[in-house]
Image (cartoon, rainbow, N blue to C red):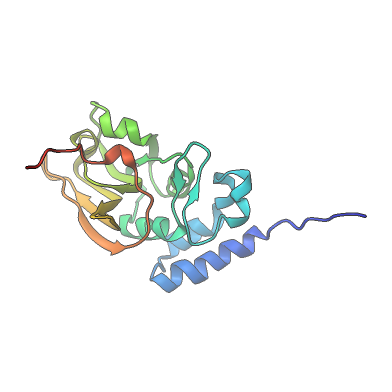
Length: 198
């Protein structure tokens, strides 16, 4: 008796992701659809998760991090509108998918792990910072990596609700403006330090 297994049709799954997740949620920018239509999401998840790589949910990675759902990346790129003059820093939660998406759209891409971005003392001059997850706040270590006038696109978590958010640096100030509510994995490295209250 021969057992045959059918390999998932990833190209069809990718097209279905564009049509049923991104377009129906208002993400219709051509450059976003083109990039997400050619970068194979299944290459950035563990072997056991490849068949579900295009589902509308986050996927746990082997190192304990997550690859967020496709809508987060689509909405993030649409909001960021990266250009060939941008030098980009991706706070990469471990998948490598977001740097692969944005790479051909910009001048340069560097990556940094969340724990390093949350504690690093170095300064940067990135015109665009993309955070691949939801954060409670922008610590000074992360703000220092954004150039004057530069922008940051991230998920933010407030009272347990996660939203896409954007910000622009002006002087030392960098505040986040919440946008659309959506499911985004939380990056614990950016949790606010516990404080005493009486």
